[in-house]
Image 1: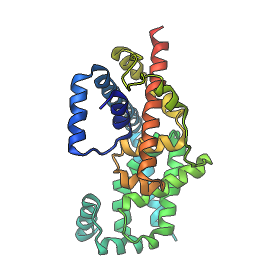
Image 2 (image 1 turned 45 degrees about the horizontal axis):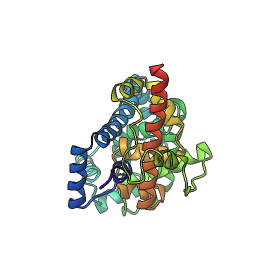
Image 3 (image 1 turned 90 degrees about the vertical axis):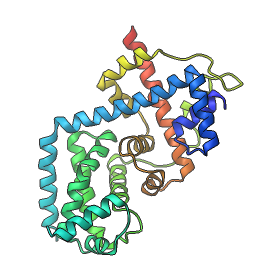
Length: 78
Length: 208
């Protein structure tokens, strides 16, 4: 398994059989650059989730009110 | 809300299996069932709409339209897919309409050429574009992440949001977006690498 394959597997979210899974794990243990790439992707996910969570937290009351409005509208649906 | 509906509703929502009673309640637009669904999924829908780059006000509009459309077509829900797939499918179509987006799957994306140049002919890294600390610093700037997410094409933004934030399965995402598993893999590949390159390029600005 070469670095280019690892990048494709990690970013496309491919499902792997157990042999390929072990090969991937071994490669990540041995290759610092691919390990760093995997870490980059993990940080991307984390950063993006935090961004959205912050938005939701900051606007929690507004979102709760919106939910009440939605329910009211749907209960009056004809 | 009756105890039976409450328990049954929650069981259905969390087990992912279809129960005829619950499907019938959805189709009949029973008040208690609608309330369970709104309380369970409204925030997730708003979260996804925000993840697609809409402002809070527009996200509310998109989600409101989603629920209204859901009420219109609830009688057609057959329970073959999870109700979550049904709802997110409506949201996706509403978001597409709002953005007047074309959802043609492109055979080529420029990120593929950029990434190709990072490897030698044997498939090994030629060099690594940045160090971890500057990437972290760049990512602390929320505006930068937002800008980079905003620059993604609509379909890539959608798969990234549904997969990485909402943790939907590949099958669900394919059903929602009417794409193949292979398309999904390619879209995720492009989305993640575009995002990474965008943040790396911006981190170089931060370093300066």
